[in-house]
Image 1: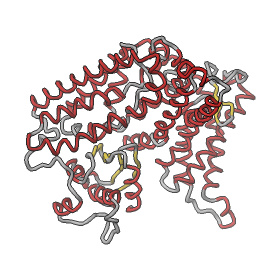
Image 2: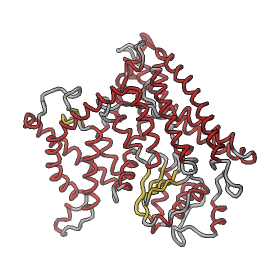
Image 3: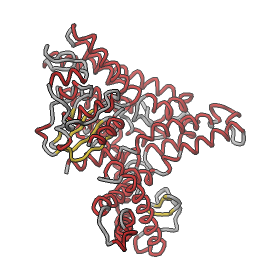
Image 4: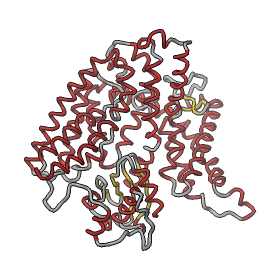
Length: 530
């Protein structure tokens, strides 16, 4: 079950990778169409406003169609075969479901306790999806329906039909089954989802009353679930669904950007719901403190080569918001350090919340600048300055605490390994020489030695026990997620680090190889070897 949940979490991340660019477009579009910043130049009706408004509305594509995007994207990671066809099946099946729901509510809304004549949005519980007026089930509904369709696809796509029925085989057969399955699913949704919406509203009220403490609990769990690959399931309902605000924090905050930019009130007063997108702070301020502690406590002869490792992975965390490379350098070597890291992340999020600085702070500097600093700096620079001061204080705290614990308990963090261990990454030739063997992908397996992604994929495959040991593979933004048949055949963390990865996280038969931002290309070569 844990393997399936991890795989689901990784697949769910596929559309999220589009949000960084969409956020940049919306941030700049909002900035350049805000009169309080650009004056008459940005007034409606001017050529300047018209051009930037076109760009801004295009940037809204991703956030305006989030449920549809999640429904279509899920098969990329979960379909066992013919992923592209499954995406098409998910699209038409999801739309069929919405038409069923819309028609049932328009005819029998009173029976289901839904006022279908009400305007979409607000407290009506209704939404427009692909121009269909329907129940607002958000991302959760999209994932549930898409998951059902994927299960149908995996089971029935290759069913052999009699030759005279051949035209109904493949995707058509999947849709036939989906069509009839969606009828009871739509009925159940109409019957039960309004009550779920009542529960969500109650949860929103509960979270709102917990204030800063709730922010701390959220920040701790978001970090603590990273080793299990379940953090996506933790934050997604907050960021992209209705857990704390209708439409999700990203959409609500981006929609309110013009009003927030024009106001001088506290950010926390203008967008209290945005307190939960707070994982940025530990990335920007925590990771440099950790890296500095590693460097200071490293053996003198290893500091130079350690620096070449720490600089890129720290910059990746700060600017891109991807922390796995640095966190996984110590997660399994010294688990207590990771727990302390989670606690400090929670305390930092609470401290910055107390000074009133909230917003879409979930990625790195590149992403958060577009939706926060650039459009909002003019009227809210004081709160950002306070956040900077608090963050730098916590950088020092991270450094002092980590340095103390590393020295006190002699944790073998990077640069403190035994003399026979290497900090640097070894080449393929060095690895093969050390193992005195060939790739386990098969005798005569063709690997393009000039393609670094193919080389890494082949080496990862070998360390995972070879092609015969692989059940399935998917990926999130930095990790290759693989389920294996026999976990005892999988090599240890130092072996994976020796080929240039940031290590491996093992959970039963579920393996997560930390590759970095190049993981999609490595996965392509990995699947080719399979």
